[in-house]
Length: 325
Image (cartoon, rainbow, N blue to C red):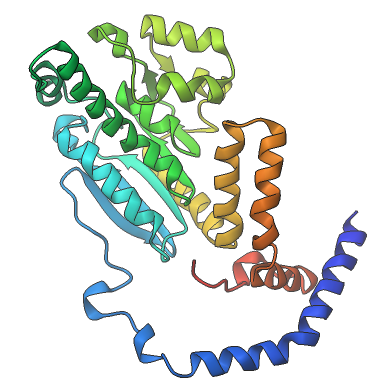
């Protein structure tokens, strides 16, 4: 198979090189005029990151963003500002050509204690409306808005690695369930806490966790009892893929993984994420049709030629320079 693949790639590369001079000449004519228009304005420097009240952003590596839940004095409890800022933050990250991968972590002693009950309780207990139906209508709208705060992680085409230390409670499980890769420390534990405060989890855990763990009995047990799931069991059931001795080691490994992912073709990586999420929610025949429609255009990218050439020259993918996306 390797010999056959090498032959196909070699033929593809030779064909590309045979037609390249004409196409390059055409591009040089088109790109010779708007040079000044392509310069980044001073107020939009590519290395700058937005400032938020509940989140801290940092470009830790080339093409890698670190998003930190940043209310350590409140155990990173999720207040009103947090739900809004998650949507704003990850919508911007999704459009950021300088970012190819993201790491999420929590500041302080734990990942998150979940919903800030002191602040969020009044949002639902004092819902607007002249009668029960109208109050319910407004509550439904708020719940849908809060669901989007984590659904935005799936919609973001950049792979998202979440690194959990200490407690990950309630809304924290909703958050990590929407991420692509999950790491944790030895002292980490997870808790679907909602039944202990008189409600059913409503922003993603009950919908995503069964697909992650693949053990309906275990998911039901966790959701019905609110018992703690400790790190070793979280790894054995598939909730996390790796467990580390401490937070620092975990973060460095998460940054290394993000750097590795960020070195690949952004078209290939982001297309892979989009199709993985799609296939989770659709049948195999539907997903195959979607994949064929996706790649009928994406296979024509220069990234395939660059990757094939690097493979033939025995170069690492990290040595390939891909265009921004």
